[in-house]
Length: 123
Length: 123
Length: 123
Length: 123
Image 1 (spheres, each protein chain N blue to C red):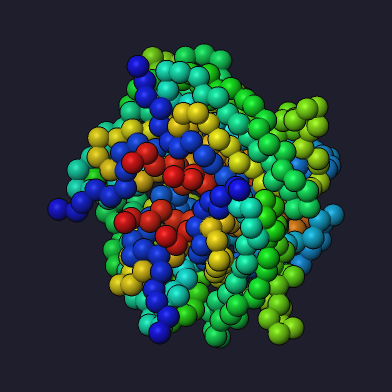
Image 2 (cartoon, helix red, strand yellow):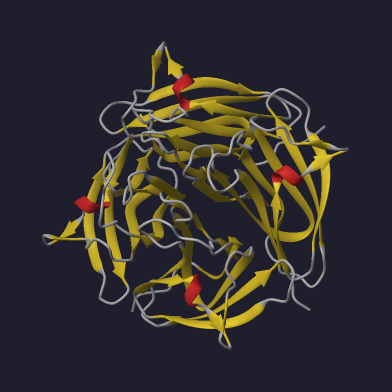
């Protein structure tokens, strides 16, 4: 049995889905999760905004001994996706310890720009 | 009641507002804050320089259960903004725990460049 | 005798080798390791995927008082390299404490993009 | 009296001074330090390589209540600077706690690329 590693709650304050893509690649963000355990990780993702109540408890599963790179544009709560061009923040909760990294590819202009952070773990 | 998470003091040593923008986007930096608590967070931001005394106690509020992405060009102390094209550092203090990320978009040239870090928490 | 510093297990959830290079530079990722100790560090690197079992125990050595910037494209297990254009995650284990940073240069388009994170230490 | 915050030892595994600049900006790296204390911080910086002994004890001072963004190209030991186009790693030691961030601007191609990390603190 492989054990779970990491933490159960992770925060990403700077979420943003760019409105425009003009190069060969499409602008996108990914929440990249690693589950080192021999059991599946059940995630509950919440999205916080500047001017409205949070979207809470969007569910995802990361299988045992697998990584999952989740496009934020694929996340939806009751059919409502995260709006584009709006600042937001992300909280990722899991029933077992995981590790979370956030990366953004901005292809607003012809050439792309990249940024990445390890999310902040709440211990 | 949702609880506060994170830390009360965060440091960003590499602050810099680019002097020029030449693409479709404007160069800017953002201090991105998440307040997960059911009460407002009251922030006191200080700016440190290489060759002069710090600008201290610039005040901001991040509402309960909200994120706020603060443009550093909007920060001012007694009407004095942060000078552009000058290296500086940022300290963010809050009366309750928060989480802070810093991101910079540099549009000095036609194509943009991005960088981002989770600020360093003082525990 | 110089002592070892850092941790023995490090995680990078967002691994990805870009498929295309079109500028003067070649797209690549590097796992950058520092060994501050007076003895060699013996690494065991595992690669996790979204849809298949991990590649485990790829071995590397970082000499005493040296850094090593390991190109992920050079990593192979029984002759099988990491596939390009596929999301994956990286676990770096060492017999002595080390410090690990991960950087990616994406030259998919004519102009390059950079991202970098300090890997997440498991304590 | 303002107190010192942070840690006394910081590590940056991925150092690299790009060989070429072709845009309006010059490729460079910065070691960005914040000293929140009312006394000066005395730094001792060591540079580790892949294939030779480290350059040890390059000295710098960060004044009380000041930040300093140190260009790595300005660092030298007995007149010998850090070679360009060579992978290296950085250790920053200080006599009092400080906070350290590392940023790189790569202007190898016409458009610039940025990366930044908070250095890894040794506690």
